[in-house]
Image (cartoon, rainbow, N blue to C red; front, side):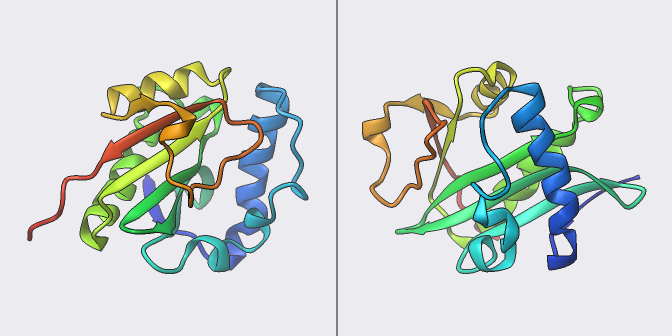
Length: 165
C-alpha cells in the first residue's frame, strides 16, 4: 500500500539511496551526495517556514521523494522530485500523488507561486510538469531567491490556487 508522508531524519540514507542512482546512473549527472548538503540535513534545509519534504513508500520502503523549499514572498521551489524507475508512469501514479501532496500543502500554507528547475535530459519530467500545469519560463524570469542548480537548464512556474477552506 502506498503511503505519502513527511520525511524524518531517520529517512535520510534511504532518500539518498533513491535519488543518487537516478541522478548518476540513469541520467549521468555528475553529482555526489557531498554536492547535495540538503540531503544530509533535510529537516533544517526544507522543513521550515512553508516548506516540507515528503516521501512515497510502499511496504515501508521509500520509492519516491519531493520537496518544497520556502524561498520567501509566498514563493517556493519544487525540489528533489524522484521516483524509482519501476514505480514510474501513469499506471502507478506515484509522481502524481507526490505532486498532489505538495500542491495541497502549498495551497494551505499560502504559497502563491512554485518554481522549479530541471535538466534538459529529464524529458519525461518536463512532460509531467507541463501536463500538471507548469509553464516553461526563461531563467531570467526566476525570482532572485530561487536556488539555481548548476545542472538545471529548463525552468518552470506554477501559480497555486489558494485553499479557501
